[in-house]
Image 1 (cartoon, rainbow, N blue to C red):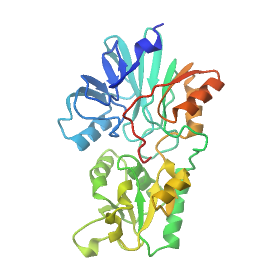
Image 2 (spheres, helix red, strand yellow):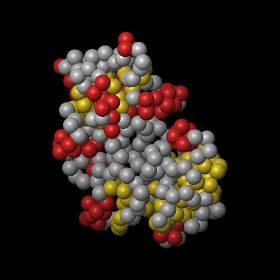
Image 3 (cartoon, one colour):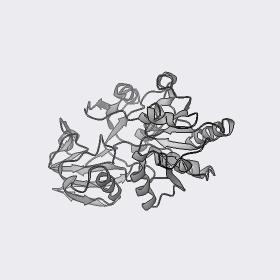
Image 4 (cartoon, one colour):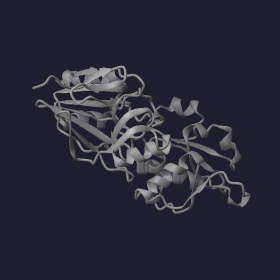
Length: 337
């Protein structure tokens, strides 16, 4: 068997496969990049070639324009490609639309790079698929036992109860523009909220793309318009990027009530610091229970931990008889997830 370090290794650009001649989610421009999903800390412009799912390629075009890479190739989920003798397969990650884990295999050794992932239900993307492997590379955004995410539908129910309790107030929900915003909207529709949902301009193109990809979001309308009669009425729900909820932009609406959909809302101090009245614990990252369950599901003998609370998860692995180490990859941010 080939040693795992000879199959994938850390370099300043990101995870590198010497045999295949490619990087996974590189943080600097490289000749050949494999991209797990469309969030900006994983999907960057300027690579010589990009291999990713169709949805991730489309999202990169929306964000960076047509010329975001020298060449592109679409990866089909479950289809194995041979790259210089290295077998590469994309599998669903359950993070956002088009997100994928990447399995890299040669010489009897299989490593699965998770990218970002979650195990909870999401009506806007394919669910996570556990893949058996020798080494599992896991994210660790919420890798502390304190982080246990409640059911997202229950959090949306709290939002709707607040709307009933304060019908005169405009509820502005901060949600990351790719994935979280569309998930919150879809969950509101599943909860039988049929009114128009108003969206910040930064969400418009991505919401339009989700609709074109078959994700039903119901009636949406721009939150800021020229005609006063088309402005969001009191008691409306507005979805906006997190930075907008405590910005001057939000103060134009009727008695705004600040809400924020994020796994970080588990920490009350974070909610207070941002002036959030209605924290919603809705995350597109796995919580502690999901992280540890996923490691068990992969049956990996070794775990590499990256971007997040690495030390706690490494320690959990060691206690449970698994070899583990932090990768200390730079350039991946704790998004408002």
